[in-house]
Amino acid sequence: MAQGVLASGDPLVWSVHQGRLYLMHDAAARRLWLGDVAAHVARAEAAWPAVLQG
Image (cartoon, rainbow, N blue to C red; front, side):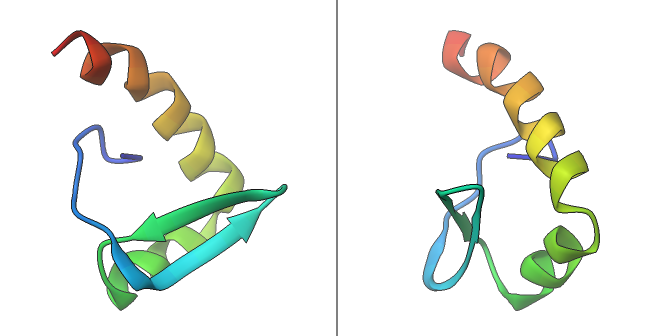
């Protein structure tokens, strides 16, 4: 979601940040995520309204 598109999540690849569970598509996405969690969360939160509108 941080990239602005929905992707399937792997229940074996995840991270918890500030009490919220985030599923990742794969291990490479998790490594990228861990590089700057706060920035990825901010981008994902900003992208949600457009995704929800379709």
